[in-house]
Length: 454
Image 1 (cartoon, rainbow, N blue to C red):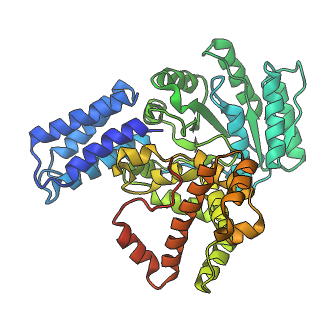
Image 2 (cartoon, rainbow, N blue to C red):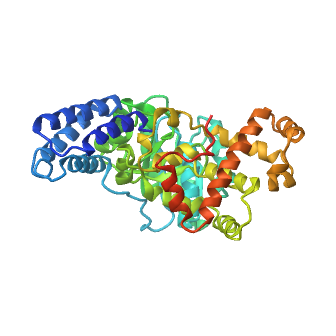
């Protein structure tokens, strides 16, 4: 998400950064470039107009023009206004009501409601230690009921059965009564979607909302909807007392205008963002971090949190101790690093959160292919434990067998071994005193070798 918008805006930021003097004329020139970037990013026209007006008022005042570093000051203004546009700070779910707290999910068909129900249930179970139950009120699409049950089993939460032919509001009411009896903390209610907004759907969701007196009503919207997101958001906001928005498919090739427009149109905070298909691919939405990411400044705080949650600390400590004792970094260690990288969304996901990666040459960014990680893992899995421990023993006949076993070519095995050797050298440098510092100085800001590029 925001790929095109980020590319355009980070280019503008780069141009501004070194300017020691700004005039009204080149401020207007910058604002025109920002306006075009936002419009091309599918941000709604009224939202763009209000945003540019706010930036202009601050940019033409003493805050920027009279500043000793006006370029940096203007960047700060743009970042602040982007943050304000998306909601200032993360707004979480409220757990102050008497349990069970009812969370109603609403949205169009295909927006990802059912998958988001499971992602949210996992998040609440893992991060907040809540007892979560789910129920499907989509009586029109049997596949949706089955899908929710399968996802519930995958994440280890209970999914109440849906009675065929029953009215959706009665299903929700029965589920609420049962969750009371079973002392559940949270009940997540999945509702039916439609291919387009219609009065019948809106009345049905309103009836479900009344039946369970939902504490949270989350509007689930596809980040790839573009300008249609504005009309859809308005319709749902008028029909339901929305408390927040969940933006799905944010990992796709979306322009990102929905995120910037929906918050402004509905006045409701974006609470979560879906960043992948897996059940753990749901993140709290932080407007300030997203603004920095859009402007190419990275998102180090989210990266740190992700590392804290997903990196196996025991395994990392074992590798560190192994290197400290002078033992070599072997192919099994390399395999473990690949798995952890995949768990964190792959190299492309990590790069988006690192400052300065937007300024990398296009040929470097274009060659980052996370599918290569999977291929490397398959090749290593085709090796014996002895080969993983002593890669130097892998000669021609072994390479042939490994390639055949992994369904790859001998050239792929050779490439893996070359990348591993480069990674081994990096690890050796890092194990020495001041190794990481010296290694970064030697790289001179370039991407490290050994990364699985095509």
